[in-house]
Length: 308
Figure: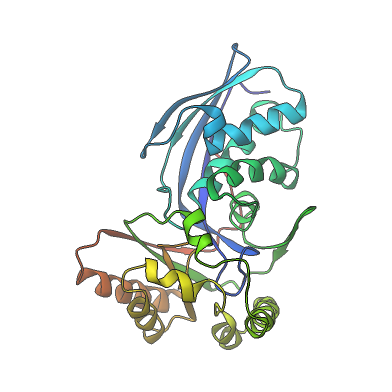
């Protein structure tokens, strides 16, 4: 066992348009840095959170809830102290709460000898994610924890599947500096989806899986389409239609809302198209007064990365 652990917990893109609540992928360079140390108090202590204003009370914090769930299940009575440097703002649409949750369970697991596999940590991370989004969905936590592109087959029982990733698949994300609460964005959709839209969404999801297996970018572009959430949620994102049109015109394979928004993602094949999409996104938002950040990345195959 180690006395201290540091790690990098990455951002993620959920839904990928055709997989509402069941698809997600992991980003490379954007994420949270977290530090863990054992303490003698027998409690989880959130010592410091830099980068945003979040509660330090463990039962009200995503990382605290996830860590507590893990320690209780493992019967560990020792305490731990957690410090977090948030690189992902809450309400960004790129898995801020998921990064904190998966980072917490990987950190405490490593701190106490790594008795559990990465996949076995998912249920405890899900406990943390649920308090932020008010729903038990694993489309951010699975890729953030395990890396790559993940399909969540079920949350009860929890089962995730790793999907293949074409080697030249990249993702570009623009994050307008406004906050969209996941719970509020979910409320826009409601609980009833017309049957024809449900059928089309299911067909698109199946075709997307096939496109990944065959590296068929033409098919991918036709099926990464959202019939459930995007029509309702795009109203929350300034200039969404313009962003999407610009990305596709620049050569993006597909474009849609990342998670609940306000971040918007574009899939692109190869470096030259990635750069064109970055410039297209940038050009749209340069004409506004909205602050924003841009990220481009390959799909991160690793997930959470231990730093020490």
